Length: 178
Image (cartoon, rainbow, N blue to C red; front, side):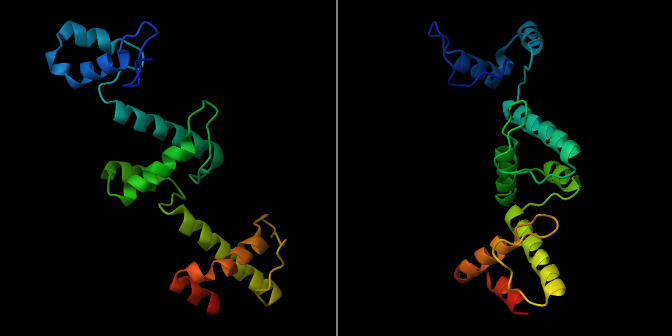
């Protein structure tokens, strides 16, 4: 592959990564023939960052097609070894820091079920399960080992909410009190 890490040094002590990085930086100093020869290499790219982003996007699309959602577990590694969970987390962080282009934001938001804040999304799911439990059983005294029909571990979720009450957002506390 031509996606050589900048720090890569060959067994014969040649700073190959540095050399390849310089080729990309100083493309304007290369002849047309040199440019054409580089572009015939497998995986050659002039923009490594964008190529890596596209690799993540393609892995996410594959995950989405296989799972029907884009809720990638943070520790998910694809069958090809790609760390998709980490990549997705990085994209959420980049969005929070306004470091994603509008096109990239549009791509993510086109995925059915995509959420920017997975933690809040999962909290809402837990709360909705609790509301359903209250409708069925008449109270919120969920046994610790209780799992609903969808195998959501509601008992542990409720226990964790009670333990975290001091750190909980006021609006969430008021939702519990309603």
